Image (cartoon, rainbow, N blue to C red; front, side):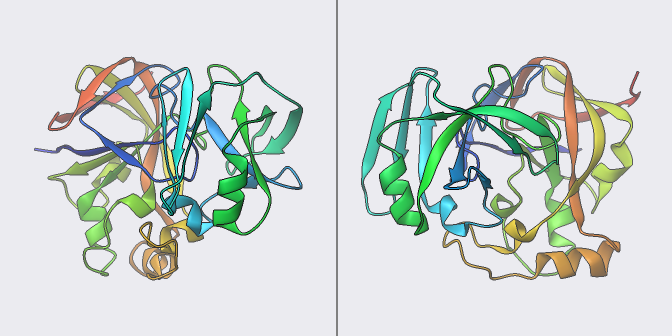
Length: 248
């Protein structure tokens, strides 16, 4: 039986992932998942692929107040600000989006952590700052099959980590619906990977050649799958994964 081993979430793209006992999935994914993101002085998206030290800062967001905790213990918190200047950018999924810069007390300490000027921005209402699809899945066995020991699942930054299956079993679900808890997901495409997976999320430093390992074991640099939410519902730790059949 394949079950949910871990649920991970962050309101700011690239920052440390927090564990959850449950996630309420809507058609746009988990509430506030990656609602905010970081941009550099040129207005370009700054992610964990380019700024490993993003993972050293944690964030919480309750729908009205954004709080960030920095590596030196500094805490910056403020009410949800008004939207500022609009910017156009390309997501890591190569999809163009319009977002808005936001002002607040987070930019200065985050710039110090990253060693360059950065600002926060917010994606449009109802759209999380995730990549191609709202939810992502990865199997523990798939990570183990890379042959680098207990490297953990956080570096892959997935919504759900699953246990109990075979290596790369989630690939076989592509094109099918799966039920997990109260939700139904349509499994769409493999997760194409980048250098973010080579970084230890505890330090931000590169430590494992995951991309080479994927190419050696799979012939291509992808691991895990992206999904869309077909039926909203709650997913909890320990929930069973059931393959329902081809997606409509």
